[in-house]
Length: 203
Length: 265
Image (cartoon, rainbow over all chains, first blue to last red; front, side, top):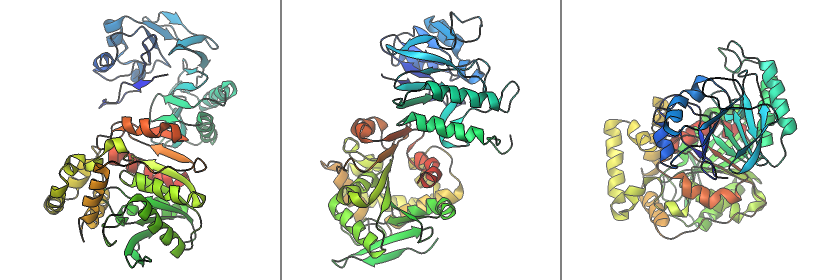
């Protein structure tokens, strides 16, 4: 499955935005990079579907621009104006012609979901390969209002329960793309989250 | 950091190297870039010392105080084996950055039974021909003059002149100094290494083949403009056990990866 990151040229803070061009041009998250529509049209002429992991500003900042340009279907857990398709835990969605399970994973955000396939995981901000705090497995921050480390830990455990051992590609909301044993990265993130220490010293 | 050391190789040539961290620690052989020298090992000074890891960085022939001329991959591997033997090291991990990538693979291809793991950071592959200073190496005969000019302008304009060629991220003055010192040391005695390796990478060449028994890991920045990521993934994806692609440029990838390189051992 071909996956492209269309936010590589971003100069200001944004989530990663992944474009899966075939067979149905699909985006995972919309990001907050101005000019993302141009970056998308460099590869494909339209977007049919946007799957959101959660509705934080860095993930949906440019959603309006994407809706104006392509008028895609919008899949999201929580209701909002632009949503066309509600998704719930356990639903199946198609990405790159392959089935992905929606895994409800709150903690970092109340409406957070991951998209889990047989080989590929779109993890949003629940698990990332690297960030300012850790490399090789980190987790989304939980120090802001409405966030919960305990709930996040539960979510990462759920993810591990449902994940096969063949998942070999990790596309996270921030940081690097990783190819290898993704379970190991998720397990490392869980172990670090479970230390229940502030992720950043000033947290 | 300890001063650089040298050993005399069997054929009388000198091989210069730096050693960071405790002698008793787990060992890494770090293969510097093109051009480069044993001084690049300084980047790991803090992390290696803290983790009790020993990072050995040999200057390849024609760089720093290592006797020219440039060697091929096999001859380089043989030099490294002599270094490992001289220091009584049985097993080692190998890291290769940029132009050092193929040389790291060469060592693992020659003595796979002595290699724990190979980690490539922004490695040069055949399709990227000229290496990180590609535009310079297109005119290899002029490269010596160009390098001397760079060397001269570095003294006038400061170490950021070098890091500016390799990364867009801002680099602390101390770090810029380290990277420039590495570059400067590389060509201080002779430009034979820089010219020889640029010609090597400019000609037709192939990556040394490492037996499957040795785990291979790759980290390559998606924004690397010195060594583009696409041909690297095309060449190495199937062989690597782990691939990490940060949104980073050439030197930036090494700088952000360097602490986890040590802690990941």
